[in-house]
Length: 336
Image (cartoon, rainbow, N blue to C red; front, top):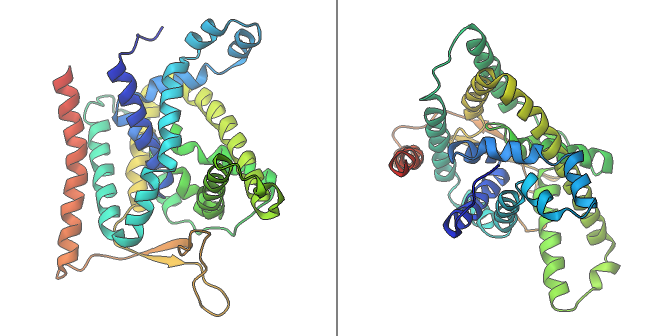
């Protein structure tokens, strides 16, 4: 049974949801890291694992209070509410800075992941043959995923449903960026930019009493894609949580070692010094998304130029990112 939460606890859960949502949208950053570092990862996984046949039985039998307690619904609803708000607020701000100050944003995230590795591994004292092997496997997988080439956009609804299942990996598995996986699958812009913008525009129109979107075939198709993607995400969230819940219960140390290795390997995705490769047409001109931003297809990494002042500013933001995680560690110890 989970403890009763104060108003302050509820507020901070929403804030944590905001940061999870923002992290999930940025290619290379995992919302699961936020959950892990903020100390609610296991509760998140175990709460999702409670969405099962027993929960549905309680709900359909009208035992709503029991359903509410059994699924830890207060925790999940506040967290998910924060994530949803994030997609229309914080993530929009991140989109802006990724275009205007890309190097510094990636540097801050790189530092935060470095800090996350320290935070997660500093109290892990269970290294042995099995955990070293698991850590190495996680490291190799993280590096391998960092350098895969993306596929082309695919609007097949079965594939979209599959994308939904895969995309939530960033929330359930620290170090695996769901948004970066969507780039590799070719559907990042379609599912996390065009679809979200279509939903936002539709809400804005409906609030003013305008239902003309029903006659807009392109908008309806995009909303259908978003609905299928959301359904796949829900299925993936519950399914993966059951798998991870089992692994954390029966192979906790090996699973944690795998996560540490995976997060370390994922540093290649957020390496700050990289040239963004944009999607271009036959005439060489940039192809823009519905928000008039260039469509990213991959990155070309390079080593920093130490004679450039911008490089040293980037190092400052890396240190700043590490400092955020060290600050969280200090705050957690102080709170205890």
